[in-house]
Length: 324
Image (cartoon, rainbow, N blue to C red; front, side):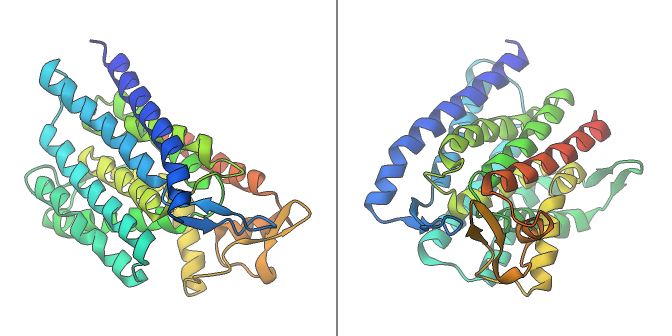
């Protein structure tokens, strides 16, 4: 069977599962009062939280379908590497669920992903310890790659994707661009293991975007945000494309440094709504989103999200130019 058709099937299957799972999930989340306030709206409406469960479900369905094809239709890929990635990803999703329900302390969220990376550490220990860096070539980090770079990569990516969030369509929109770029690179390079992770999550995020776009009916929650970073990190690690993943996360890194400089504010990261536009609350910059509000002297939430998606598209084009 043609490889592109198979990947298309995986993506469509994930899309369908996430779409219908979200439709079923949203009213049930509201029924059990699992909701959050949309602080960027004038009336601060309650919106269903933890919708990322549907993202995880759709992603998992796509990967399971790939394993089914591997078993019965001779669709060849390294099953051990994919399963190691899936265990890491589901471990981060579980951390996200616990955090959404019980509010895990920030220091715990920073360190727990290190332990979630153990399956990837195991497969990395018997695989390549090299990283491909554009314009430089392959660099072998040896044991440092296994015991330091892999767990830190998972922890950093998952936490960064969880930190730069909170606006309708931002997480799913930027994530869709990232995974579209990485899926294209994976297929072009013949890395089935990367494609089996990136194509299903792309389908899942596109389906979730129907419900998460302005005005959002559901938020991904930490379970969704942590999963996005975990999938990106896991995929580039098993596919030896770590630098590509790092470049795609430049906006997230910029947001991290601004928030680190402001000592990681836990509140007032949102915008002040005035006449259809968002302005930096109290005129202060506490993150990358508020910096954009300041630069544009007020911007609607839709345009703010489109702006960052556009930045991600530009970065994605650069990554495609470097890796194709």
